[in-house]
Image 1: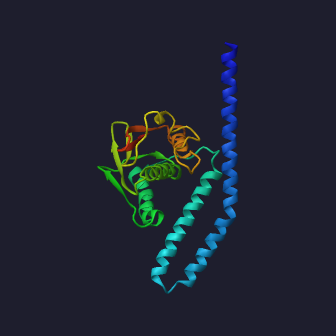
Image 2: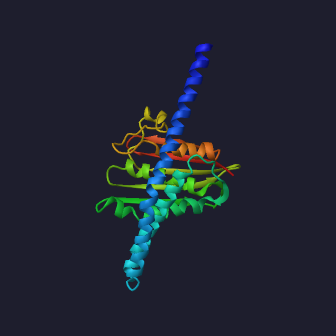
Image 3: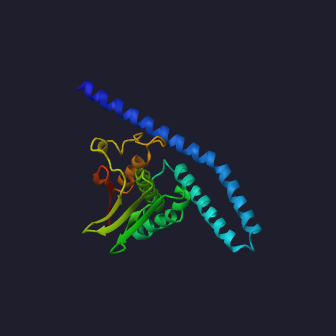
Length: 238
């Protein structure tokens, strides 16, 4: 009994130390990003003034400004990583669609010529639920990036489906990627686990924490077939 209690205590201390480490890294990252972001925002304003009589260039600058603003949101997420998020009643369709539209405009730029990706969104209604829109958007971003990385052939589709049942909002995110091996299903939400050469393996683990710890919901692999694709499901309380 003493050995078991000792092991539980040691594990708890270890988890607490790791949590503090990630929080410290997050806040330091936010601090380091602050200065170049402020500078970029200033340069964007100068570009807008210089291109005042060139509408086509202003469109490009507006997209640059959108990206800089998104970086500012990411920085803000990291700086507040140790705070309990505020949840508000939000339209889930609009929250998801805002992220999808951001990615749609950038797919050709991000993946280059010869690569074809599409994002579809099917919804029969527009339910609401209590979410933190920034953090929830982060989860949707992570799932889109994860799906894009899984489609190694250079083409494929991501399909979002939004439904409701008696007490929940159900969001399915399906891709036509390489799928997840049966053994890997148990590890994909574990911090540090990744099948990719790049990345820290934190996207899905952070998504799980945001949905389950902060929103009281669930996120899991609904279905996956090797060579066919994967479907993740998010379940939120109404």
